[in-house]
Image: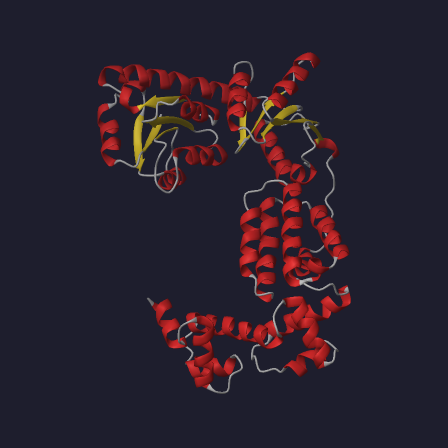
Length: 455
């Protein structure tokens, strides 16, 4: 049995390696790591059966390490070594699948034999169960999804483990086989899951597949199915794997372009259509983020409201269901509209103002006049000036100055272009006037700004 020791204190690792009677229980320490990330690097290169890990470590905690191992290396077993005697720590470790929890302060020399013997037996039992269940096939399972009460979910998993084999699926999510369960026992199981503030998801029609295939199918459904099917009104859900919905597949590039525009901000119809088309694609959460987050940043850049964009992304990042995304998008969109649409205009007026804003941002050389931009919007200079200020909250000249300063800062930080050329690039013929305005707007001269970023 190959073992690695993970602890941020080198003396603890050395002590365990030298003192514990590993060979007596057919164990061999093949590596050690000072944190969870280093441990994962070892697992990529070494054959390891058993991981002994501390909980409180820098970079990646023991709990996070266990979750990563469950996802990437489900056949490996974990033993927790901790200074914490609190029951809640042990409960969480066991819920995540640890086969033992050892309090370091209790690890005296005279009990080390007993500890390793117990761990060896637990490991062998887990291997036997895993082998038997890898041979087993699954058709009906119950997925248990923790919604909001971690303590109750932990108690539920402990209770279920007494009479069922619980398979860890992903963070805050487990499943168990229903094959062979009677109707009354199944209903009792559903009630227990609901009372623990978890969502029971009955899955049938898997097709009598192996454990690994079952895990793959459930992962796929969680990522692209339940993500969009779930609503807060649900306290029970049923998924028929053999009647899986076909996802519609409009062009992702086209969808990305629509999120990149500002029409969804001011047009309710465009917004609802975009939400509907996005949900219809049933993208996994990772793809959903990679599609929408850059679009939000780009909108923030065009509107000179990057703070709003970052706030939106920070709020969306931890959410796991499309319904939750919709609620946050609705709230943040209302907030943005109140900032950028201070006077009620028709969608047509808003569309041409945002078209003008996009045009200005896309120019390599910032040498344009208000009359030129008003012409692009097909409006008189006076009416354009009035509409522009009402929509953006800034005069045209102030808005253009903000764009020019933003572009100038980027060039100062990311290029070695001389300051006089940067001034010309962002629309100033006079370097001295550019420097004076930069000092007025940013608070430092361009040369000093560049030096700050060079440090």
